[in-house]
Length: 385
Ligand code: PLP
Image 1 (cartoon, protein in one colour):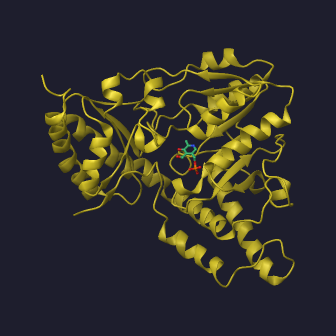
Image 2 (tube, rainbow, N blue to C red; image 1 turned 45 degrees about the vertical axis):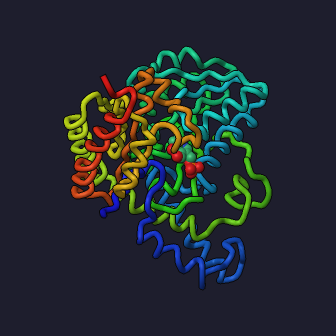
């Protein structure tokens, strides 16, 4: 049986080149980068290089990058650090379709003295920018809006959003965990103050992330202690993982073109064939402004979890809009915010590709998924006329 991994928005395979680059820093090169002796010096040199590589991916200055433990920590640092820096501002803006790393934190803050505005999206998952403009007031500390949605792949117009937020004098944080490495991001062209990314979404290991902090942005450290990361994130650096993220960033730059041509073509063929072969099926989200690797498809009258289990038996790994992303049986908050009908929300499936997928993988999914849908509809009480 073939194994097809099509769940790359959940996590990615660590690239072999990344593993190779990291390995010496688990064994012979174990110095602490803060140490004055040559053991530390060798390692510090490599950390500088890694920071430069991450900065290149975002076209920013290396001094604007701090390393964190994951995307969630980057999001928390950005949002908590900003509200703490502007204690007199008590309003936060985000969207209804953010990842829980942002949404649950903002909702937590709303129970602790902050007013929260959650911007709505339309049926394609897009924002109304005039609603954003009207929502920002003098009291707004931070606007936290993602770059690309993890479930649908829908990309928000972050350059326009940045202009609006800047003109109103608030701080703009962008969760670019899903976008980094998949689409070009250029901090010189975008009025973003803070941007989160996560290693395991771009072929680095789990447990490493980074936060871009624009020069001059006011940000109270989230983890307070030693002088590491210029006092902006204390704790001895996770050296091998930082080096891994540096290598993964370098590779991402090299492969970004492939992602937007070959992988996009694979995704488009997969989507087209599934829509052609299965009735009562729809794609969720704006298909024009979308990550090149992601498709979110709903099959009416079937349960997403049942599709996942049957796909898994065929060696295909994908994700649904409910249990697997949230750990509960709650249907996806993203699809619900888009007003997708109930019968479609429950049958939603996310397929997300990477540079390790090929034409044979797509053929294999196209061969096995439609019969699974047919079989599930036969046994579904909703599927019978
Ligand atoms: N933000 C988005 C959009 C994500 O998709 C994820 C993870 O799926 C996160 C934040 C959290 O990142 P991490 O798993 O590195 O904490």
